[in-house]
Length: 283
Image 1 (cartoon, rainbow, N blue to C red):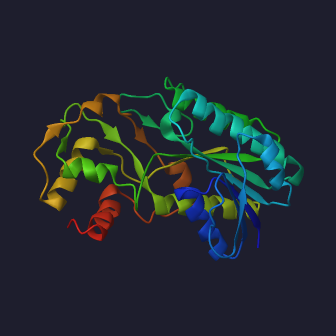
Image 2 (image 1 turned 135 degrees about the vertical axis):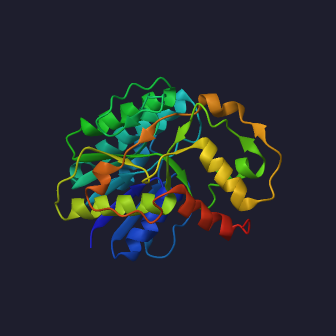
Image 3 (image 1 turned 90 degrees about the horizontal axis):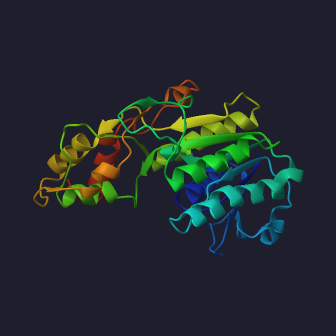
C-alpha cells in the first residue's frame, strides 16, 4: 500500500483518487472546497495559490499527482494555478521526498497547426497563453530536484463531457478539405494511464520525463462529426462552425506510452462515443 496525494480532485483527480483507493492505496486529496471524496479517502482543504494553506501537506507521501484546473481561462489564472500552484506544492512536499510527482498537462503546449505528427520529442513553442503557462509549469517540475513526470493529455471526453456530441446534434459542420485533425482520450483511459505510471514509479521501474497520452487514432473533425450524425440520426440542419479555424490541427502519437504496454479501453473515438451515445439514449 502506498500513500498517494492527489492535488485537485475534479473529474480526473477525483476519479483517480477513487480508483487508487479501490486498489488498496492510502489516498489523500487536496481541493479548495470541503466536499467529501467518499469513504476511505482523506480530503484536505487548501488552495494551491496560497502557500500558507499548504501546511496540511506536511505528511509522509510516496506519490504526488498534480491535477488542478484553473477556475478561470485567463493568463493570470493559468499562471497562478498551474505554474505558481505547482511550485507551491513542490515546495510543500519536498521534505517528504516522494518517489515521483506527476503533472497533468495538455497537448496545448504544441504549436504545430498544419496536420503534423507530434510526439514527446517534438518542439514546443506555443503561442497561446494557455500553452505557454502549461509549458512553464512542466519545466518547473522537470527542473525541480524531485523526480517528476509530465503527462500531456489531448482532448478528454467521457461522462459529462459532451461538447462534441452537442455540436453534432445541433448540426455542426466542418468541410472535409483541408482536413482539421483532432486527437482525444476517454476519461477512463486517462485514469488507466496515470494508474500505470504510478505503479511503475512505486515499483521503481524507469519512466520518461514526458508522456503524450492520446488514443490510437487521430481523426479529422469532419469524420468525427459526420459519424456522430449518422449514429444519432435526428440532428439539426448543418451549419458551419466558426471556431474551426481556431482549432488545433495536429496528429498526436502515443507510441512512447504504448511501449510501456498500456492497452486502451477506448482505442478510437467510435468505441468511446458509441458507448456515450448509447448511455444518453441517442442511438
